[in-house]
Image 1 (cartoon, rainbow, N blue to C red):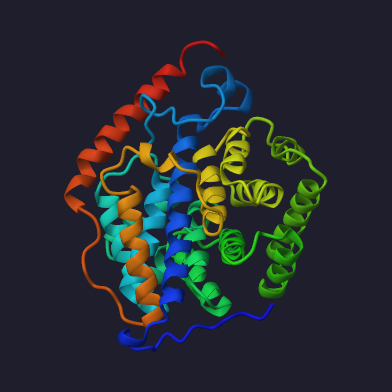
Image 2 (image 1 turned 30 degrees about the horizontal axis):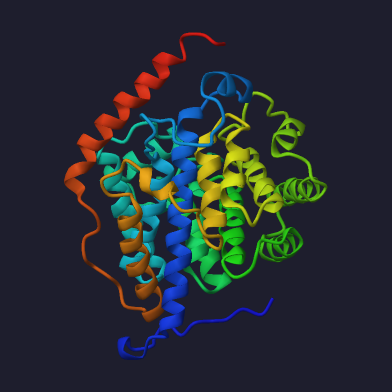
Length: 369
């Protein structure tokens, strides 16, 4: 694959407008697609496929709060990554510093439902532990859930590798977490210019991952996912083959192959893919966010889905602003230092979110079982 390398030193008066618009569109699509997948999947999180269907029905509309959707840490982390790209213009060390600042502010806003590894790492950052020592040994989904927007934002695979490494190691040090996150980012990177092709993806991934047993394990899993999808098998059946009959776990080597199976199978239909992966149960918000983020980088979202996100900041307008500023910064090489969003609304918003989540948990105590 011959890739187009953008000149990141072009002065503002001579910016390649088409490149900015294309990059902005890919970032915006990844953010919005991920948010929709996250919001659709959130009410189903932790339920088996069978019980989710009995309690909630099909994930064909938002079921979080009277037909409205809200997003979880999956979308919040993707937004933090885009903000860090804007503040750093894609320079790796500056990106790390900006993401550290973002994660500190995020965890101090009292978010609900944080993964244990991510929580420990973020608290270490708050306490002043340096970034190269903040991560914990875990192969959870945290890095993968914020990876698609990196693939949507950059134009060189070398930069993709470096940014994923930094984004992952801040919270997770198990190489499996990094390899899985890179697979997600590479899928979004490829899909933003052409429909995701499993064969091309696997060839690229194999050439970029190191010779490592953990990398080989992931390649075997993704090869199986691709073959199963091309044969027309359902994602639910593929998940069952992995032993995930009770739902997709939060282990990256479970979630990412299942999510990519759906992307290989239905690269042209974002909503069909998101719906199919959520129907597998388990870590549904993260799986939905990953699928939506990958396909959103290159597949338009159907009208209407974006308008029922009950979020004061992480909504289409907020995503558009972040995407525009990140695309401009990455392409021109000029960092954007202005503030993003409204930090003052984080705590009250998170408290409302927690109340609704607790209400969902209370509902699950009752039939149907």
